[in-house]
Amino acid sequence: VQLAESGGGLVQAGGSLTLSCAASGLTFSFSLYAMHWFRQAPGKEREFVAAIIRNDGSTYYSDSVKGRFTISRDNVKNALALQMNNLKPEDTAVYYCAARLSMWSSKKEAINYWGKGTPVTVSS
Figure 1 (spheres, helix red, strand yellow):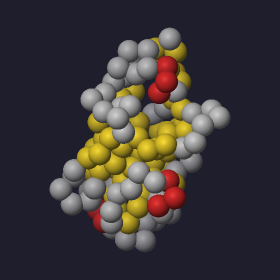
Figure 2: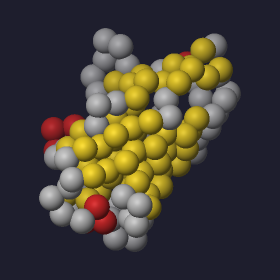
Figure 3: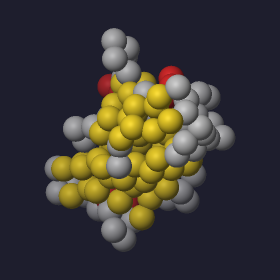
Figure 4: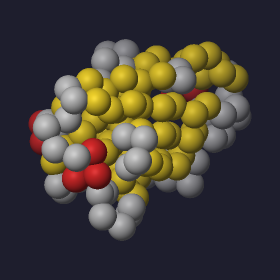
């Protein structure tokens, strides 16, 4: 299984970035997995950012990113994206793509597969 993130980088506060995740080798069809983004800032625990479920595409966000970030998926291309707008210095972290079969979860312990992460740095 491979979840490959891309799109991270350095951006000024107030700017935008779009992260992408390409999935391959999953045991079941990509469309059966709830897909997530988590992030981990230096010295902090990995935390939930956003999730999108397999069926109707319903989305879920942490309070800290709600209204600024948008998660989306393409079940034909086996791809996940995270559009991040109005970025803040506190958004600085390594962002991870994550997959969980069936239901979504905000708990990192419930995740089945992780990518290696892509770093995002927001300067003030």
